[in-house]
Image: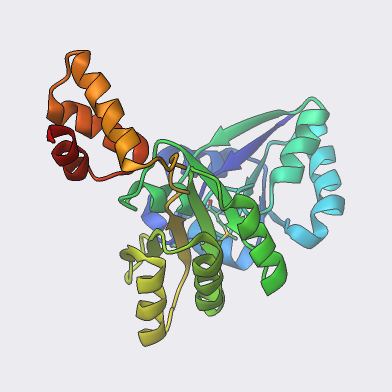
Length: 272
Ligand code: SAM
């Protein structure tokens, strides 16, 4: 029995394929590619000549079965897509599931993904994040999806096509409120650009400048819900902390974080 290799390919710059990625593509018996013409550019850049089969969203079921049979019969196969990691908003997920169900070993040869690359340079919180991929192209469905995630505190990652960008940003502003956003465009390519702003600023920017190229949107998660308490109540809490030994400034800072009331206001009020 052969193996299935899931090989990450560049998201723009053809030099971003790993040495192991090239070696794997040279060694397998066949390559399943999303668009064989796109993948030929990468393969010819590295002098790789290999039989290819097309494997894309609409032939995935039937082609997946054929690929499985070849692997069961002893051939090694690789799956690649037009850009980035297979299976991430790209074909491959079903093939991996099919191979795994049939006892075929699935090996990953990691490569870049636009989502992770954009997150890394967003300047927003990276510790916890949620990948949302493409939102629905229909406005109502898109707004419903945004409603479902508007309380999510994770940093949110979206893919978007340039011609839908403004409509998506407007829906995000309407549903999520004016949050920080980092828009990563054409990563690793000649016109790579990162716009770090808020949703309102992004709409103004891309109304003035027509969006071009491929985009990843990194959107700040929902703010922590803070209990709304009156100032006098918060001041009492500051004084309690002071009685426990904290300085006025430290106590004001702690309670400010918990309540959202300005540290200076708490500090002044607690001195009175
Ligand atoms: N599997 C790919 C990955 O791992 O990144 C994603 C494929 S998905 C069909 C294509 C989307 O990824 C684009 O519409 C865009 O949102 C994003 N994308 C791909 N390459 C990009 C790049 N160089 N710069 C910015 N976004 C990119």
